[in-house]
Every structure is written in C-alpha cells, then in structure tokens.
Length: 311
Image (cartoon, rainbow, N blue to C red):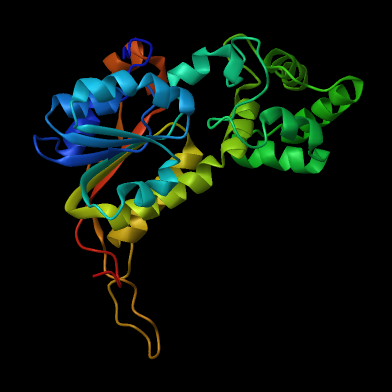
C-alpha cells in the first residue's frame, strides 16, 4: 500500500513519545492511510490497527501481507479498542484525531468543498449523512450544532440561509452547501473559506467524533501496560480541550494538596504522568511541507498504574 497521498503529522514526535522499539505492541486507533502503522512496523513493533472506514481497511490489506504477521487490521471505531484488544495489554497507543487526507481527496465522500460531491461525510458509510442533518434539522438545532461543533459565531445566520435554500430544493452536494454558507458569511480573500467551520461541525456531528474521542481515551487507560504511552494528535480546539482535560484529571494536575474535609471522598490516585513540554507543535519546516500540520497538537502521557478498582 502506498501512503504517498498522506503525510503523517508529527510522525517523529509520535514515535518518540511512544518509545517504539522491537518487540513492543502498539495500537494505531486511526489507521487511515497507514502512516503511523508503517513507521511503527519499521521500528520493529507489532500493531493492532483500527479504522471505521471500510475503504481504509481494504487499502491496508497489502500492508498486512507485507508485515508478515506483525499487523492486525480491524474495521471498528477506536472507541471500541478495548473489544478489539480482546484482553491483551499494549505498550503504546497512537490516535490521530482528524480526517484522513484520502477522505478529503475523494469527492464522493463529501468531506471537502474543494470538490463537488454528495454531501455525505460518513466515515463508516453508515448512519445519517451530512445531507440528512442539513435538510432535516430544525433551524435552531442546526444553528446550535454549527456553533457548538464548528465554533462559528455566525451560526444563526448560516442556519437561516440553509433553511431558506432547502425550501427551494434539498441541499445534496458539497458545492451547493459551500455556496450557501459563503453567501451567509462575508469574507476576505485572505480568510479561510467561510464554509470551513460549518463543514467541520457537520463532520463532527455525523461521526460523533467528540464522544468517540472521550470513549477512546477512557478505553486506552484500561488496555495500556504500566509504563505504556498514549499519544494523541488533535487538529482543532474542541478535540484538544478534551485531551488536555483528560490528561490533567488523570495526572492529578491542579489538584490541591490539602487535607480532606470530614466526609469528603478522596480523589483517585493519578494514573498518568505528563512529560513536559506539552503540547508539541509541528516545526516550521513540517508546517511548510504539510499544511495539515499547522494546527496539529500532540499531547502524550505515560500510564503509571492500573486505573482505580482494576486489578
């Protein structure tokens, strides 16, 4: 399998955080085009790779053959990594929380307004599509979705323009939606495309990405070995806040070192240790070569012990 279309973001930094070495076992929870997995295999590791996209699973079969038994590729959501692990413990877990370049580059997937295609955005090819949300949600619900998941301050205006347009005809393509949003949100040539935040919001909602991330972080805590590493690369503030909060809570960061009040329940002991400095951002050179890396942030931590209550 060639990964020429996809450049793994912060690859060297992720491999360093995971301490990849021969004989160690890793989970790549977001296989995509296989960039992290291939690098881990080249470092001598074994990989359980997961992806909810059947296209990615099919494209990765040649790498499975090439790995000669050191790679298992499973079609599932990364929130289900515990089930995929089947009771096995791992030395490291890598999560790249973003849409694969392959998905953005395929017009028929409907992730990007760079190409005209069906307004889909479903990573797993199942469930409600972006077109379903755009054409069926009430205006207030659509506005809330665009505001919460896209952080679009003009969400009410965008929702109003969408609802007006869909009365004329259903909104079924990426280009038509992008044109509608562009009319709702004035922009200057140097600005990001006005539809960027709306498309992000719809993609997150369609794929339940934030819930998936939260569940995956919690699952990772249960299947890492003591001393195992969890490395997470995010691409926007919503994702990064979830990861930052998880690591802060699990490492005891910010916890007051004071006596408990009578009857107060003691907080659980920290299970992760953070290693500064964090977050790790792409170098200027990487950002120039790979525009996708400009917004990327890597946070990672080391498991100190099993979670409270688990033997």
